[in-house]
Image (cartoon, rainbow, N blue to C red; front, side, top):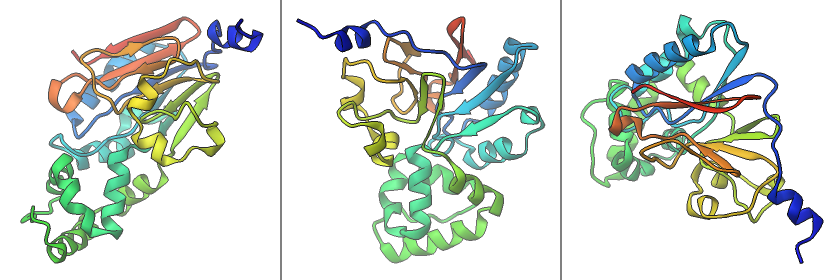
Length: 248
């Protein structure tokens, strides 16, 4: 027989954020889609009090990673709007490359090449030559605006609003939140996605691209593969429920 705690978890209703939260999925260098989505969100929100939470992966794969970050830092469209910027695994790898150039060979295969080009780093060696990657890392550091480095270094691993947890990839269902690290927050996939248990929080995440945004009683997924599909998605979360907004 199921315990009362099991029954409670199975039928749990999560407390929504105190104001509307727009959680924006993986941008991956698509500044064009980001600009359009922000305008769509402003129109959707109207005079409603709202905030933006970005779920990470601003860089790599798409054509304008540097432009995306510059927009997030300086755009007038975001002035006066409370924004929270979370870290994705791609930002973590970018920072790692600055201190450990040897990761460049692998990073370049999943989007680092495009990011380096967007910052004006040319003649990028795609070999595993560590000396060449060390030179590329030095060039990247020289080209990286201080405000951009500050942005990357200040990214948060997760944030919570009401009973909703916002994180890039997800959490490990087998571990308490206090024991989890960026290994889970930035990289987890199957162990989180395939689990059926409800958690203390409803988890809002990106990281795993899908053709359409999705939600169930445990989680809300908003990564719609913007760099490849041309669709960037946000989830509007409020007392009224969850509504998906895309740049279709």
